Image (cartoon, helix red, strand yellow):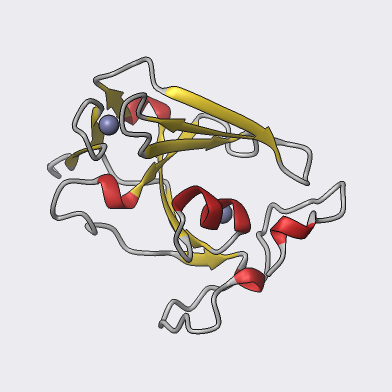
Length: 152
Ligand SMILES: [Zn+2]
Ligand SMILES: [Zn+2]
């Protein structure tokens, strides 16, 4: 019988802790402008797990919800004390939540990266050997033109 993987993590200040069970549904590097502005970095990495496989120790995370140019909601959840964004959910992915990879306790980078999305806005110096790359996203169906802030 396989051992079920358990990983733990938390925010910068330690108020929010979580535990994940099992393997991710998917792991992707995302170069979209939402991930860049959310993280303040060049890209986001999402470890998508089923909601039932994520146990949070602090239920009252602050939330910020907005609508993307595809007309669907994007909700970020962050620590009420230190504002570390730990989770996000996309309307398009029902029943699963993305965990912010840098928040996992060591070994923080325990998963394989399956693909890269929104490469159209990647930083020019990004260079890696991930095979599957998408200019936008396989599920991307914009209903409005991209705002200026979504371009680089
Ligand atoms: Zn915190
Ligand atoms: Zn993104």
